[in-house]
Figure 1 (cartoon, rainbow, N blue to C red):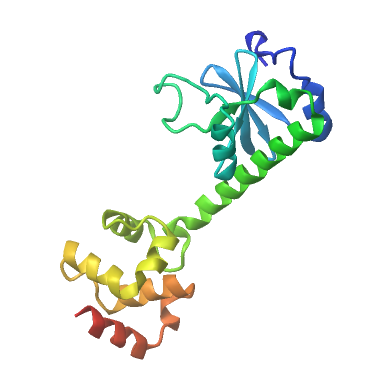
Figure 2 (figure 1 turned 135 degrees about the vertical axis):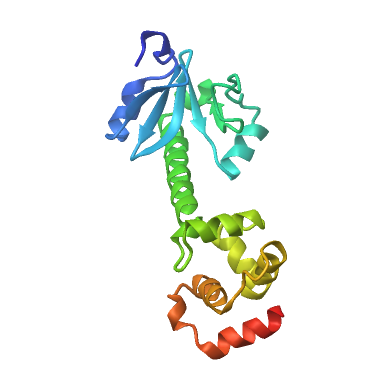
Length: 197
């Protein structure tokens, strides 16, 4: 770690190293990011520890009046969810490790979710089709499933004339079902085609 970014006297870094063997620091945005098991869970800035909060943790931190990391927008993503841990956490090792482990778990879970939610990872959906789907407001597998093949094809047809042919219908239905498009029965594709028209 840079000398200026050593943790303050309130925090004993050895506590973290004792519990998290894969602890790493990476210099970024003029601070040090804290990583464990491949995910960034914290930031050391001006000697203070900020922990990444997701979902309920964020609400808990905000309700508890915890200070959010403030950085110029040019140096950090607009929506950062790093909160300054108050001294209360430093005096209770169990409480400190509990909040850090939660942060690591939620961050890791979110990273998996984002990867598996990408449309291009579905069967039958390549980068070209993903771009088309994005252009009509469908950004994730959840969006695709929620709309269903008929509504997706109606939206595609509105924006791209003659874009929902037999093969495209089968591909979208297959992506929703999680199978290769050749496994979608022709009778089902014809049924969808009739609903779209």
